[in-house]
Length: 408
Image (cartoon, rainbow, N blue to C red; front, side, top):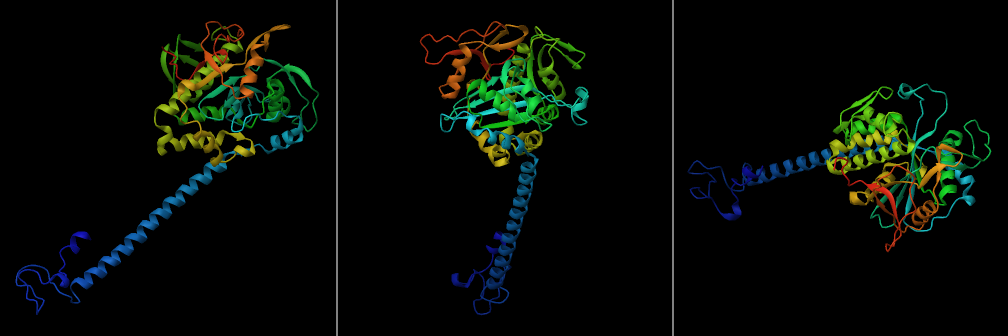
């Protein structure tokens, strides 16, 4: 359009060289000029017509794009399941729950369940109707969002589980038992109340994911690379992996974080630390390959993640989840920390854990007051020692960060 318009004669500028101004006819081979029905007026009308058509076409593309974007948003938003039952149960005990001490700080409880319900989960064992928390992580996000601290709670930790609304509709009696019994008894609400009783930390949000969801998220990321100090051959988990760097697909990743008997010392402590190493590698994968900035890579991850999640109603929307992730995207990997609650062997059963004091109280107090936590790798798989205070304002706990390469 622009090229054709530049060749039209404009009577306000005079006749082109070689033209007869009285007849409007060119004496040479140039285009006709002058203010005639076949000259500049027609050309300007043509330009306006094309401009209008272009504008309408552009608007149409924008509408189509906006419509597609809205459809994607609605799909992803609709994937998330809101845990309304937990919200009702927690509201019942609101007066007994801890008070949040620091505005802007948040504490989330992430629960991975061992449910065998559904065709996809039955491959991991018979569905006996029970469901326990196979993994539990208390994620603390400080008000300044300059770090993230993930604290694993072992499933074998002995704790006080309050009386909870059971899946059958009755009420359980309070009991001193393993932590994963809380979810089996009363679902996510019972787990939240147990953690709050244990730590005196207010849980602001919670997320629940099952085996299938975990596997789908890893596959949507095209696998996650980890480093193995030695080969893994576990027939029960169907896991055969070489030593060194290896990229795990979803099924392999699930076996890696769940297998217990054939790796390390076979303890739940060793399994928890393996889960933390995998989560560190997962953080590196998401941050390092452009997932967050590439729609083609981001969509399948969001689709898998939202389809897998059950969350509290306050977090059960794409907008709320995005606001949460947006606050985390600038945290350096060396400030993404992983540790386990300080624990030691339970006095009445060496196969169970109990909190190691005063280290556990010191950890919970710092998280509760948003005072900051420091971690350092430990050389022992035994119980955490009392954190060393020394001259540092923050005690140091045994743990690691997402920045450490497992092969280094």
